[in-house]
Image 1 (cartoon, helix red, strand yellow):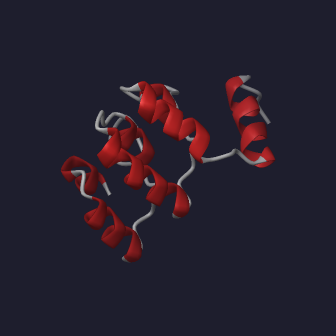
Image 2 (cartoon, one colour; image 1 turned 135 degrees about the vertical axis):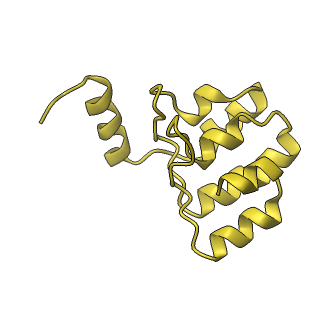
Length: 107
């Protein structure tokens, strides 16, 4: 998945997903996932369709990287941040997981 974001090409991303690429796969040593990587892209016209494709393919907005940052925390532009925040509503399960993780509750 990482290569497609380096090239920033929607068609390559779509092809990778059709071939079974995991849209929640960890891509680098910082434990960034595809949404973290595309959030750093500043061209909203190119980022928007890729973000929507990732969400449609099951990408999770609530995954933290190694620095405990969410994709919207890494957004370089307000437009990308807004798109990430409004594109996916978190399920109750995801919200509970976030609270447990942020409170460092050990179980």
